[in-house]
Length: 339
Image 1 (cartoon, one colour):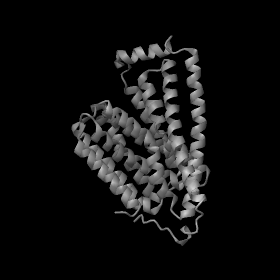
Image 2 (cartoon, helix red, strand yellow):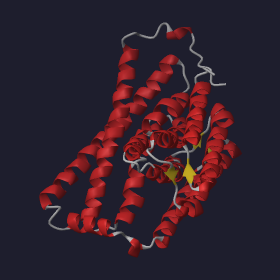
Image 3 (cartoon, one colour):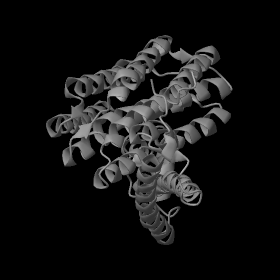
Image 4 (spheres, one colour):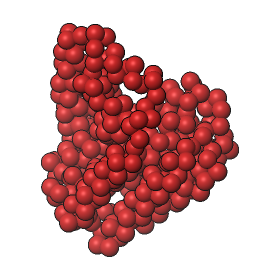
């Protein structure tokens, strides 16, 4: 279904320009991902230093920061006339988050992944519901209109208000309170604050450059190889922009706390659908290609439902993790016509 149609002009592609474009794509994507990591870390420290509750910092700065690569690459896709990459990027990233990230967490974790009841009662239904809303909007007219994008953004704002209202701020544990007090007080000096602010500004600049060069090289590579931009976006770009979630998962799993990655994935997927589609969609309508609609959207729904049913017993076993990995291998294999 996703057979790569490399025509005869592939032979005529300059052996100098194509490797350079591929190098620019890899470096640009790596810069985007790494700069987003620095940006999120600095923003988190500044937020705690200003006395913001750790819960607020986690829900806003951390969860949104891990989705910065998806958002910035999508915005540059709009600005450079490649609006078709936005939906593909979101679908590919969300599938990678569910199958690759959660699957990896379950496999390498030192213990069975445990999911808190809160997640099941509130976030998980919204996680599945957002995937179905995405599918309905995409299939209705094969694009996300400005009205639909505005609706998605309003939905995310309502979700944030609900989360903040339902949170019990008095339940913050002593360790977190100590951390906030330490950062806001003598433990976090003016010099350190200025250093984190400088990191924030510099990483923001590199995020801008990384997103710009990633999308620009993607467009040129797809034109030279006659490969659909949506295929590159749903595979290479989506996998690259999911690296922050994957790194968080690996680090948490090695520490025996991989269950934290489940919440990160669910929050990231909700943000991707509501915001990464919503903001670019306000600028320009976002088309959805036929092959994405017939193959990748059903895969996203299947992965989301699988996640929903697997965590109903509040855990994810190693065998269920392998099931996620198998689904991701199948997905990538069919994209490139290998399976």
